[in-house]
Amino acid sequence: MSLKSDANLLINAFFSHIADYLEVIYQQKTISPASGSSAKLSCEANYDFDKCGVLHVVWHRIQEGTEKSTELIDPSRYFTTVNETITTERMRRRQVLTEIISVKPNDDGRYQCKASCESGEQAMGHFITINSSLTWSGKLLLVGYRIWSLTELNT
Image 1 (tube, rainbow, N blue to C red):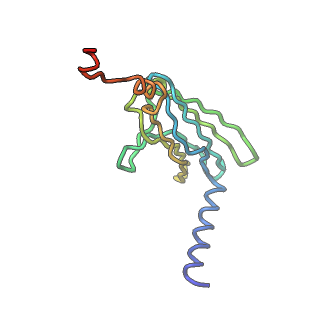
Image 2 (tube, one colour):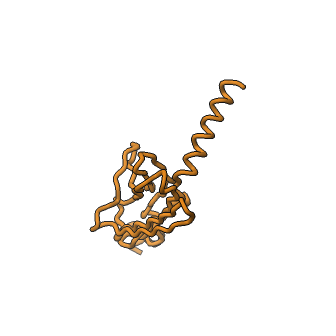
Image 3 (cartoon, rainbow, N blue to C red):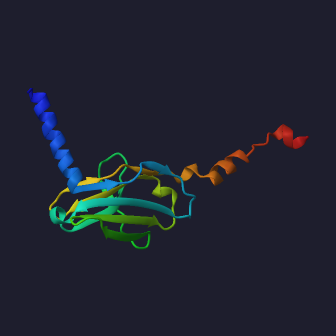
């Protein structure tokens, strides 16, 4: 075997082990809530309780231009519900739904669900993008806007 194939086997074994241990699942998408409305972020973490121990799952906002993130935990801005079920003898499924109570233009950006085990193992999902400037009300406002010239006003 070559060094490259040995490395691929090692990488595949490592990632398949993690997939059995902890995974975060949800669809990658862009949502466009109207300003003042709510936006819901939902993810699911599947994990082995015996290997993981206590699990922490929370939505994060990714700071633009960096890999840093902030947990969405401020109760005046976010409402989070958690539902956990035992799926097999060892496995559990935790569903986390975080609602941004009243979307503001500064909420636009990328969001990601992250899970971390007591053992230190981590997993994260795709990015969800919030873009409140793509709402229909904004488009309709621009479509209905017209600039009148002075010659049109005088006739």
